[in-house]
Amino acid sequence: MKNNAMANQSLSLQTIIGMVVVAILWAICFPFITVGLPDAPPLLFASIRALLAGGCLIVVGMKMGRMPHYSFQGLMMLALIGFSYTGMGLGGMFLGASDVGPGVATVLANAQPLFAAILSLFVLKEVITVRLYLGLFIGFVGVVILALPGFDVGADRSIGALYVLGGAVGTAIGNVLLKLQAGDGDVYWPMGIQLVMGAVFLFLASLLAGEGFEVDWTWSFAGAVFVLAIPATALMVVLWYALLARAPLNKLNPFTFLTPVFGLLIGTLFFDETFSTVEMTGIAITVVGLLVIIIVPKQESVLLES
Image (cartoon, rainbow, N blue to C red; front, side, top):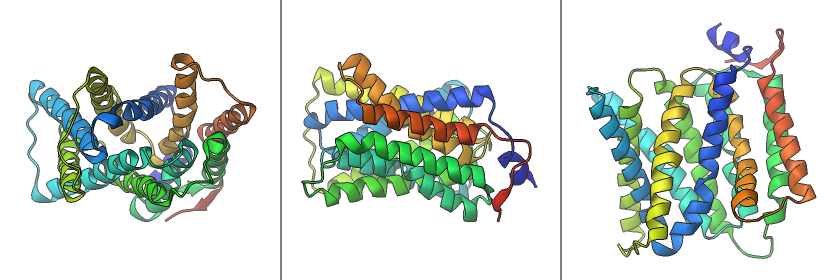
């Protein structure tokens, strides 16, 4: 009954604003990854980002005087989150960034809410309504249209596409696990610990891939690491974790469809890019999909309930 009631409640304005901020913070990742990749191997770069973000959150947790006591089971859960959400998610993002065109990467990365919706049926027992399915479908169609100008069908980029898709699957698994943990105690320590564990997984993957340790610490690379680690990771995951404690995952996750929208806005504001008619159409359809999910009637038929 609790899941049913939550599924039929509209999101509060505060939650909506919080999710818009999360989408903006996620959107700034892609340009700064591009800035930093020439100066460091991708997996090592991702590991540095996660380690700095996790260390920052742990320091904040210590300064607030909160010392956690985790059971072995609790640490294993954080290790799974670190492996899936941070290790697979960031690893796929960084590995695919240099090999896949922006259109393909955008579509594959934003398939994450669809994967999470399927997982949440079996793990979280969340209710999937007709309206939610429709909103997810419309939002994803909008993302596909948004990405059309960036598609490169002439090049063989299957490996890079698999990296991005694997990252999307890892993020979806991590989000479901985060939802299981959300609202259970402190925010800073669990997010900090899983990020540090994810950094270790990424570093081990870097070693296995034979990337080496050559990092050119230019000002541009240092700036990219700072932006990616502090606002785009540390701040974002704390806000995301707090929001997960307040609303169903399947009503929050579709806001990630706004990531490419804000990415285009950033390009327009800071890189003198312009919107095409196709991109404006994609933005409009994406917003319609989100409105379908956000605006919930008092009586809504339930399609599936576990």
